[in-house]
Image 1 (cartoon, rainbow, N blue to C red):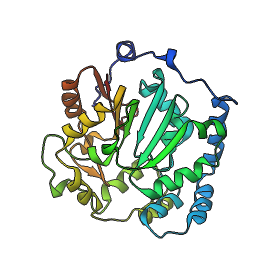
Image 2: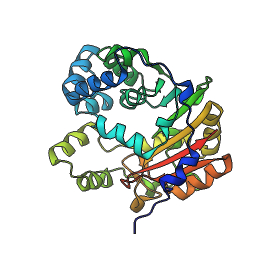
Image 3: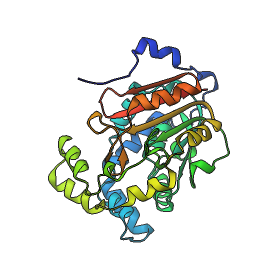
Image 4: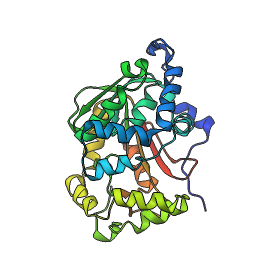
Length: 295
């Protein structure tokens, strides 16, 4: 049976805040055209990634191999549609912090509505994002900034805090982490890729870029058992809405696929309920957990 906590659209409206009165003025040419130009850039992203990585200096590391293989392969049109249909983000305006911004994919999407600061602890990610930024239309460049750093150290306040798949929320909330939770040989990850109709050649390329390792358990040891503390930190820098997004599958609740912990939405809902007005649900693709907390 399909499991969902998603609230019907007519009920969801009461959680949304219409703040168009403080919307940023759009630069010229219209940002809509700039976004279309960015999509054209991204259609040939693998070629651009390879060119940029050569310019930045060849690095034989997991990060560079991943982006040479095409990165995450998100589709800009579908990503924008997902934001519009699955979240209340487009109802807000102002400033936005994009946590774990990587190469900047979601930062560019969010720049349609916000002035966005992308932050990532990996210097190579910010370096790549800055190089991509130089190739994008001026209206987008003016609405986006990047910085190397840990979001947990941020002191500035943002209207929206966009928290997609951060390492510091990537572990159980109410129970200890155990070795049997991890997908160290990537077998569960490969199974999901095949379920999603990935070509076997692409799977092989991604496994080469993302080989079996113990990086997941090591990362968890840094952050685990601090969910509440870190959530309160995020809320302290949020002016309007904090949004948490992470991939999850009901068959794997409480386990890792690759290095991603599959949260049970009931646990997120229980925690968020302690902090006020909120909405927690599984998206319509049955792929992502979305949690919004309103200030």
